[in-house]
Length: 311
Ligand SMILES: NC(=O)C1=CN([C@@H]2O[C@H](COP(=O)(O)OP(=O)(O)OC[C@H]3O[C@@H](n4cnc5c(N)ncnc54)[C@H](OP(=O)(O)O)[C@@H]3O)[C@@H](O)[C@H]2O)C=CC1
Ligand SMILES: O=CC(=O)O
Image (cartoon, rainbow, N blue to C red; front, side):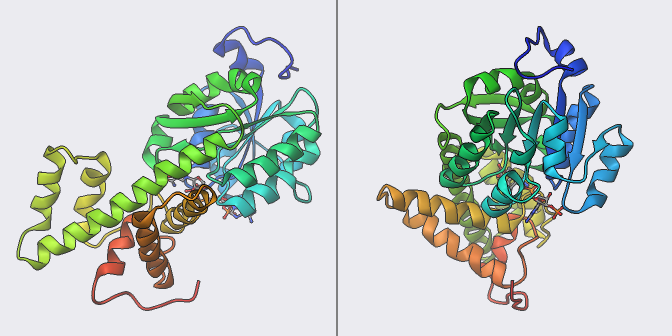
């Protein structure tokens, strides 16, 4: 059996011998784990809602009933959880991954969390003698399916090098940013920009319609100019139809804005645009749009909002 202390000559050899754990099989975790299985890795999965493991088990994955047992039987375990609370609990709580880790193993947290949470997880993992890498991803459901994510990593460089072949299967690029916290910070800055861009785009779509323009034409105009972004071309057409098929849940975008505002406050950086955008996502959440795509933030700018719902 291999472990992280052994040398792995190339990606093919690694696929044959490295035992990979994957905990957290939501919108992102499922396709990421699927790509590893399809590449020949020996993958063991766990998810709080067990039924989400079934499609991966059908593809050849093994199953263990807790993060602890996944970590105990794997060389490296990836975690893709919703938020700081769940990432911390799955890593360090009762039957959490840390209880199954030991020297020679590695834990890679690809969830989007704040730096303080990532450092807490890192400290607990390192106490076991295992290595830790934070590696949040930029890119959504489709890039996850297509193996086109961007990894923003920080932590143990040796683990980064060991898992590089796996990151290359799940992603198109990877950045190593040094100390734990830097990957989390980079991800939060990127998603702060994204959340504000989507809020601004929403205002533009609604204003164009109100002054008698066709918002679909606005999407085309924007897509051809200097402010063109794949996000606008991808989501604009469905936003015009008030459709928000979920790729990136709105509740996670609001979480990221909240965490980014905390990061900004910690260094006294003024971020009024992000603060205003955050309020819009909060309104959208309070109207029951948490599980819709984050482009549903446009609804919070409409005069007739969906019925309020306590979340
Ligand atoms: N979707 C996207 O486009 C992107 C998302 N991200 C980030 O990746 C992470 C995951 O996102 P995504 O896959 O979309 O989210 P989902 O909401 O689809 O999945 C969340 C996962 O976390 C698990 N989970 C939630 N709470 C707990 C808990 N208390 N204990 C154990 N497990 C828990 C869920 O389990 P269960 O199935 O039981 O609910 C599920 O596996 C988030 O941090 C998000 O911000 C990053 C880039 C893109
Ligand atoms: O975190 C979301 C993304 O699209 O990246």
